Length: 88
Image 1: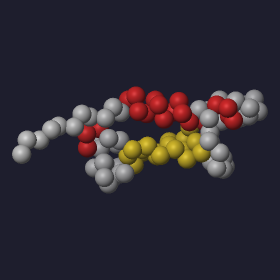
Image 2 (image 1 turned 45 degrees about the vertical axis):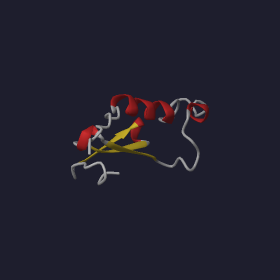
Image 3 (image 1 turned 180 degrees about the horizontal axis):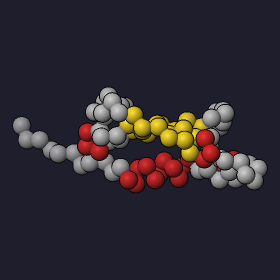
């Protein structure tokens, strides 16, 4: 996606949720089509939604993390540009 979206090679990484989540972002992409990759450390292959994370122990950095909400926040701030119709 990074190449296809015409992103700059500059990568921005930051830790979230007390280091439990690593966010790697490629910005300055063509048509504002930025790319974001979230890595949840030691989580396994279970959807990190509020159903599971709400049951984590008090003080767990992933308690109440909601992947669906995180994805929705990304899409809200990165609207797809309307395609321009070309005449032949």
